[in-house]
Length: 178
Ligand code: SF4
Ligand code: SF4
Image (cartoon, rainbow, N blue to C red; front, side, top):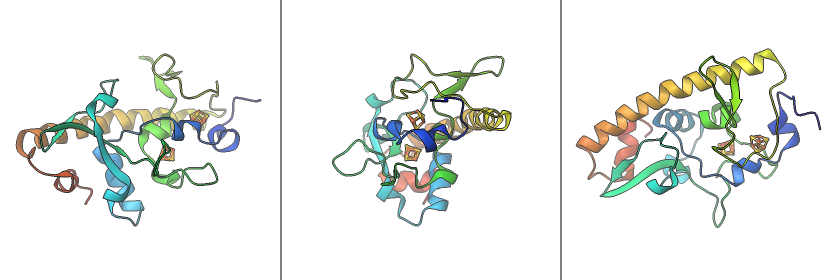
């Protein structure tokens, strides 16, 4: 199998990571999805206990005295992302979360793409982007992801300071996705 393919995830995988992974997101991902999906955000967004975040990337928020993190709901009775279609493809490809646009890559200090080996074991393929355009798209999404996590951390800090007695609906309004 040629593992240098810009569309490897779409062409050669049935979305393995979309069925194996709790998808945590930022406020900015949530806003983009809510602008593209004609559903109430509470139908597809959810809070998970903060213990699922073991990489110290997404901030913990306090909602009614529970320490939680924001993510995408699973389909009923499964560990499959709400947005994975029956065809094995993401149904919100154009505005899927940054983590889905960059997975399974990160960048070293010199700006080279590297795989998140050791941090995750859920991508079973050693695929790499084929074109320089795709490499650049992933790099730019990683940079955008790091910028947006800072925005979300600031929002989370403000929420935890002022709004921690509010419920999930109020939290979604607070971050600007409702
Ligand atoms: S949002 Fe799309 S790409 Fe991301 S986990 Fe869900 S189905 Fe997969
Ligand atoms: S990142 Fe890996 S597991 Fe996820 S869809 Fe792509 S090839 Fe499949």
